[in-house]
Length: 297
Image (cartoon, rainbow, N blue to C red; front, side):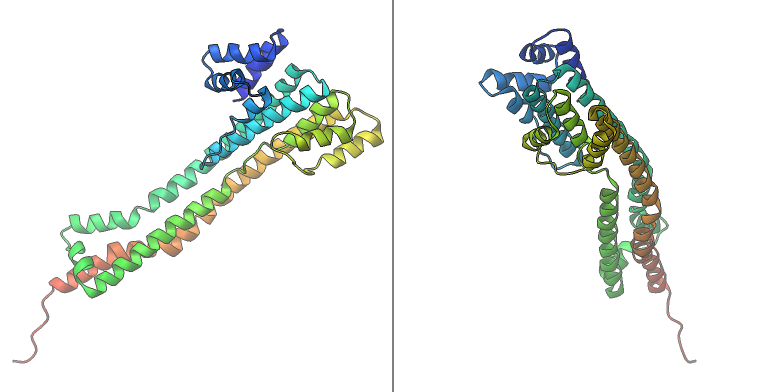
């Protein structure tokens, strides 16, 4: 998506009209641009056509993509409203989206190893059950035909389900949140680049697609700009870049903590499930096959 926005900015900077720039992208094979051009051709305003790409999905990736499209639509609307250079605004937006994507990729790579290890360990009880059968123990017969085996089967299956749910919640909590860090600061900077007041820039951002966004830390930056007598645009963009860097560091810390937190469902659920489904059936099978000693003469 960052590539699409950057190509659009280049076309606009080269002198193409907004509708023509989207059409050129669509003709080059960009499916998002094709959909936006089709909506615009049916009479939908261009900003609404861009916002319509924000199709919500169930996965975190689809949610992040929908939020990013709303941010692009907001940047487009604010830039047009204040008369800021659209190409420059989209270049800044492309950089913000690229930084956010790289940050999310770093976190997902860091999460891949502990999450994969947890999924692999979740198969340990079933692997123990197969090993018992391969060694000649009647583990399935014990689990389904013995009262104690049925108890072990129920306990083991319940522990496995609990381990999977617990692990999924831990992994989901460690995922990066939806949205682009520092996006409000980027949008306010676009508004101020058009020469409007801070109050009008904030109002336009709140009324843009995806708003109102509320106060996400831009107030101290704007106060610093007023007290120092310096333009707020670069300060806001520097603050947005810092927010994205901070989000990347926090994501890596969550991924590092996930490795130790996943030991909890492993110790509390997975290993006991292995005992119930793998070890206990083998022991019961041995006891069932061992003849009782005959008492007396």
